[in-house]
Image 1 (cartoon, helix red, strand yellow):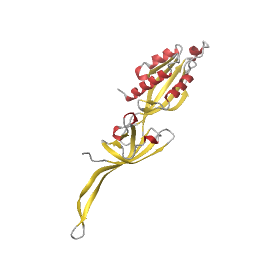
Image 2: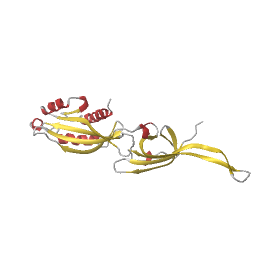
Image 3: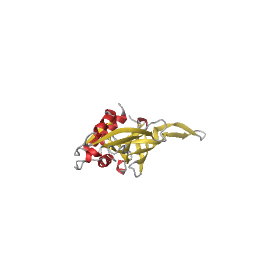
Image 4: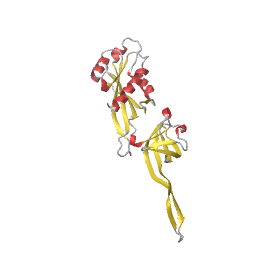
Length: 249
């Protein structure tokens, strides 16, 4: 099953709920129907059709072997104004339906991904074929090999690591030898240390883990030594975590 198609179906479900009280609006997923037939049906009658389609994917720069990035989702809103408006009764139009989609989807979490509105533009084909294209983007996937997580249950926060530093830690123990030179006795408290920079879709400092709280990365559990966050205007935060492993009995 295509992950892109799954997201489109989830988007369509949100739109159907949003348009529930608006008669004459039909929402279809392009992968699950005959788009040409649906468009002809909409143009031959009363109402507005919304086609939901995944239109592209852009890999995030600087992610190495990872293919994680942003999925582009396009809505094509179709209406025949000659049939749709001749009765004089106010009804849905390409503009009102497109604006409704923007309001319903922008900043909405769908399938655990933040949907972000980009733009809308007219793309009329004829005087009896009005169309509006509405563009959105969403992060397609969090690469499991780059994922860091903390919290429990619904409070779990997921981030994608953009930079990491991993080191071995421990304390060497020495004692003076007979000649006064240090003599190695052993190493205590062997552990792993990690410094991570990651992106998360939050701006709440309350989502930072407490000092000493556990977080997971790369199959290991670390305990927080430091945690800090910086935010931008698009609801994405850069989080820096430093922590260490602890031996389990």
